[in-house]
Image (cartoon, rainbow, N blue to C red; front, side, top):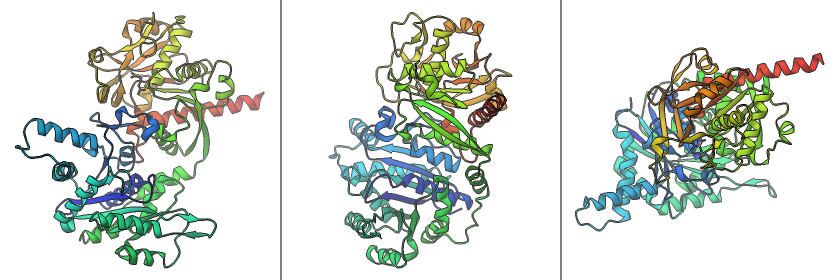
Length: 545
Ligand code: GLN
């Protein structure tokens, strides 16, 4: 619709954590709402090849795409906002850039030249930025650069942006996100850090076209003029980005500030259609005006770190909004959960979700949480390691194999009910070697899961090395835990359910990655719904007593 692909670069200044990902996703949403095709890409200036090997304490959750890329959590926001899939090409790190350049050097592709940051690393960055545009399907490619301008790590990226802006002329623009700090002693917002941050960018040869100013307090009259004057930007290109009640408000706030209009005009696009945000507004209305509240427990070992479970939290919000229900989360630390305190810690919950994870830490607490949910017939959703814990718990407490375990936790267990997948046994490297990305799954007719999806053929994303050990399948089935979903080719168990329970579902895959505002994930929608039903039954029982 735009003729040639337009490139929008988003950098950040003053401090990290300003929400570049949300602003990028919001701009993309606004352009999409006008009928344009948009994709967003994240460039991360660290040396890991991808975030798959990173501890969640570093950058939060690792998000997995359909094609099995382990990526930055911002890609989750992009998908949730746009409802279009991202891929490996949407997240590139310095590590990957260098790896590609070094591989090319080894193949002799540089024909005897000295390989240098400029032009070889910057060319590789430019190639990655344009790879999405070259597909010919996007009107806009928004490229978000992680980190803060001025960091040593981000210098080659800023240089690549400088070159691309020069080469592309009116087909490219730069947005710089800054902070207006508020000094409570004088009751003032300060513009100086923004001026300095823009100077820093200018010293690297990049003149931002648009400034998005994050602020906790409304900007005063005259402030935009001042910033515009000092930073060489048009006054209407100084965008106020106030703190929002929810991230889903940000597209509407950016629309009020006309961020999309400024972008379109600066890129020379005329006669653009009106934005249709009807469905978005409809979601927000249901999300912000719930008819009821339900409390769900999220059991994990990173609960003090909310970003570690970002997609799960968002998927619960989407699923809740679907039924006009607010999901209140009780964050339960699995390491602190014991047989003694479990009833107190999980008491009164209407649903229990046991989170994914790796390694031993907190595992016994997760198993206690499963036991509580199973015995007290509280709706249960176990995801990946959460599902594996459900299997271990059942083996220990129903089948009576007290030492049952996953070979991840105890390689010599006599009851390896969860065991390393065959294909994993020869793997040595840790990075990018798990079973990753989308695989098909066939659900059993009449299972809770099939009912939730409304179909039996599904495709979901994965990130694991261990699996349900099919050698025990018959023993589990006889005792009431069934494989309600399996991979049609490998027979790998994807879903377990307990027959004698109102709603007990464990999934080996990660449904949370596929939930979007436009299409809340049916498993989360159903989980919130059964939690509501459980709450109603519990309330009726209390009233009767
Ligand atoms: N650690 C488990 C495995 O590798 C579960 C992984 C997860 O929860 N993502 O199989």
